[in-house]
Length: 280
Image (cartoon, rainbow, N blue to C red; front, side, top):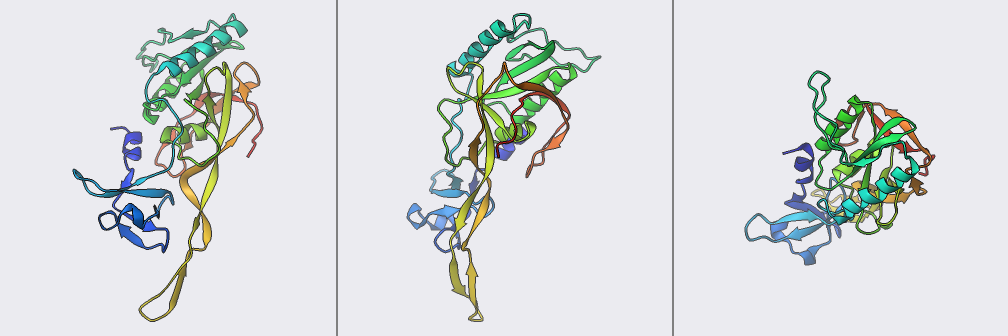
């Protein structure tokens, strides 16, 4: 099992905090009518699940980005729209889908990889990978490392089935990883957008912790809550100006980095990213 699978499978808890009084409750002792509930670690809303075949538990309710779960028609359409424009815009770039020439070479440390799209811009090799939700961070690291060894610059694009919207959401591990890789932005793509991408920054989101008052065993008044506290993994999408892959992009040698709040690091790499100034 990959690091991402282990991380993302931790989606349930047997206890939670009740919003009304911030008291800890156990899934086997409550129903949904006793809620709402939230996680004391991430501050995300939880829902109680009463089960027949496994232990009653709480599950995260946070919405996710609308990503296709497999190489769907949308994934193929994204590749087709982008490569056709790149072939017209950079006729000498030799742009292709799924080029088969990235072969294994043990002496150079090369392993076989098949990029979604590859070609040249300004005489430099560029790789475009169209991300699927089933692709783990381990595979992202592997491919990025392999292209870096070959001197190619990479951009990861995430096609969405519908618009992301403005409400808070819980980015998946690979989205958080790419967000760090590209210095605080992720590139989303919508159908019929051609080479136009939507850069999104994951802004801090907060929740209100209700105030609760009680008395301890010494009859002393105790007060908790009554303030805003940031979520650990839920974020607010903050949109930058749309960017076009054929314009105002740059080649960047990325230093190694670690993903915040995760035991996960990435080696040096070469990335292809926009020239926009920070909008957050």
